[in-house]
Length: 166
Length: 319
Image 1 (cartoon, helix red, strand yellow):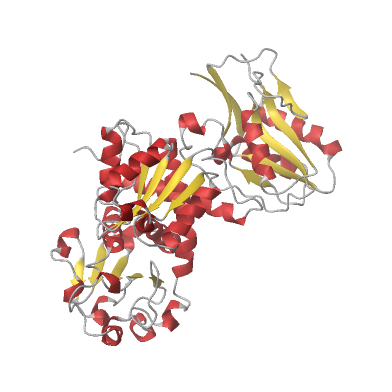
Image 2: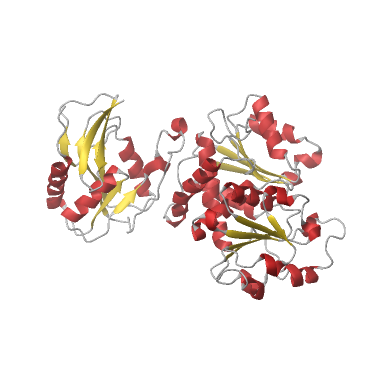
């Protein structure tokens, strides 16, 4: 399968978001792919408010089965969530469980006015009632579970999508 | 030999002692603790990791700080916490330690946090759980006799790493009542595992265990000599309640010779940090001016202790 160019998708995603920006819009990226993407979108959109980064390791629903994630990092939300207009950013939307965990975590910082979801690619396979408002690319057929689609960042910070067969 | 703290996959099953705990696991606990420090700054200081788990704080010996920080750590992880002050309950009616454990297992405990005056009580509980096929229940040693106090040792390591970064460049002095101190034994074990090249123990001869050098520490009986150019000073509490016989003349004389004063602190490096596991005896092992001074990191130790205990609990419950 030919994967689309992540850099092009990133610019398209920024253009989808741009008309919907409000003065108080803040971006929160889900570590790690969503963080890279957020850094990019933040610059492309010329936002003045800082962006946040969220690590959902402590909110995963598979902790009971898999234990603690090997390398949890600090969540950093350097602004008030109270009444904020939040755009949650992730690289690939799959089951929706990561987005669910991130939404729960955001609510532990306050009550936002709204949360919208922006993703680079929707690969199908949802297990929860979650949809992205902004999505740069939807795969024509859902990917099988055995395949893992992920965003990678090169040393020159170029973004690429990669498909891994388990 | 099989390490009784690890499961068959080499993961942490119980936390009983830092002696013999692999370096990778110590580092992993310190790494995991870092993101937990951020939770205290949130609107909702709670993570859902241990939702539905029951943690029993079993304190056969009095403690305020350790019990409270374990309780806060467990509550911030959304566990249900039951505090048993056993010194005033069934044990005084004659129930054995393992009968107490069996009863609490029947109440569906998921984790025990144990403090006991007898060295080895937590490992006895862990072995009992294994022998009775209840190895899904975890045990954390919150201090046993003179043996070990691993979470205190870990929070001390976290504190040192926070301020000093690289263990392999440090001179560290442990000062005071080493003889009665489980804290000192845990500190020495961890500091050696983490590669501290210059580890010193400063104490009067009556308060040093025999063969302390075999743990890899150099001994000093002169505080001024021992503190020279150290990066970290780890004070110990003078454990009056454990003293039997004439180990010391008077507290006043102890302070004069072994108390950490500004004048003695000045012999260490300019940026040396002063640590104390608490509770402090001001005017006996440490002068108030030092305890409240700019080089003291005694209160940060307490705060880091919560994050370290959260990390240990969530790593155990997930393995």
